[in-house]
Length: 240
Image (cartoon, rainbow, N blue to C red; front, side, top):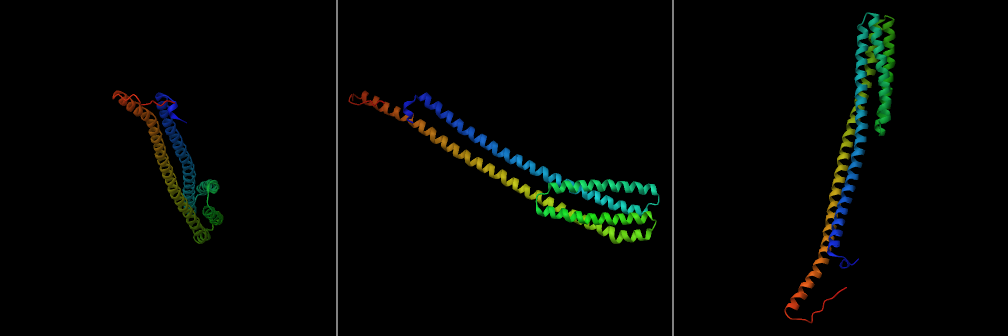
């Protein structure tokens, strides 16, 4: 394309439009990149935060059930024990629901293995609790206390240790995801800066090309005018 075939105003308008187009492309691309990173980051954070909250809630409910078992040994009134049993059952259902949600939210094999181990230790704790409850209702306090100390408490401690391990895994996963998000944002920002720099360079080169296409003919015209003014009428004016 020969720029000399266009008027000066057309060339300037074309240069301005090309510059604006390049900047628009850079802005759109940068926006798409950052939006994609933001969307992915939000999804990751939502999942991991929800998972960690579920694990911590399950941990608190297990600890509460452990306290209720102890209180059952000391509770004489049957009505009060019935309330404790009911509260324990409600917590058990909540824990089961939470563990299912945690399992669905797990993304790594390490998380899945930790959940399976927790489910096993929790099952042992539930079984030992049932034994203690049965002995209490049979009014065999000595055997109930012995079973509590030998089976229920160790099983509860194993379950709490396993859920603490899961909490640490979730926290570490959140930290890793945080670092990954930072790297993604840094990469997008760097890429946008580089792309913008390239766009500016191309715009500058195009502007120089347009300016040269305008200035060069003007310089020739000035030189011809000077020659004619000095009396040199042999100077030829090239057209086309």
